[in-house]
Amino acid sequence: MYFTDRGIEELDERRGDEQVTLGWLAERLRDFVDQNPEFETPVERLATWLARADDEDDDDLGGDAG
Image (cartoon, rainbow, N blue to C red; front, side):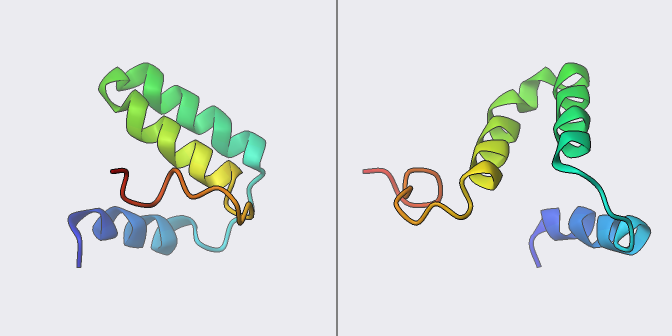
């Protein structure tokens, strides 16, 4: 189990039954980056990955660059 899995598990346990909009999630991500600017790049990458998750032609975000 990765360290980040603990946070994901907590999120699932505490709020897994809730339904949210992507607008709500985007606002929470903005709030998080405002409070934690050092995480701007990873949050940006996550948001872009989520936005493009159904785009089969976009391989930039998850693979090895090189």
